[in-house]
Length: 72
Image 1 (cartoon, helix red, strand yellow):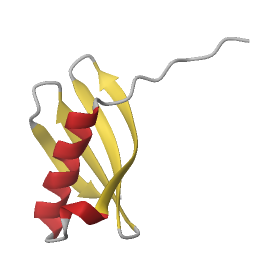
Image 2 (cartoon, rainbow, N blue to C red; image 1 turned 30 degrees about the horizontal axis):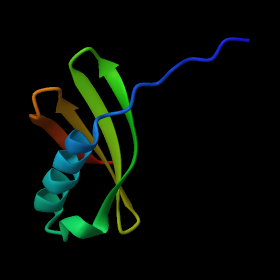
Image 3 (spheres, rainbow, N blue to C red; image 1 turned 135 degrees about the vertical axis):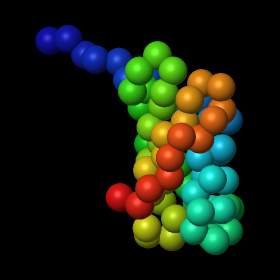
């Protein structure tokens, strides 16, 4: 049986997504927590966030540019 390795987003990129989600929703950034992340391609990560029970998905590139923040 083989296991696949999922590469998670670095902590700084997860925090950028949390900050972007806070700005988009008007919420306190300390209340938004990254719950999971994965690498979509060599330059893009998807970060799943929980903002007080509201799920949000964020796409961020390796340069720290937030591409999108959308409710799930």
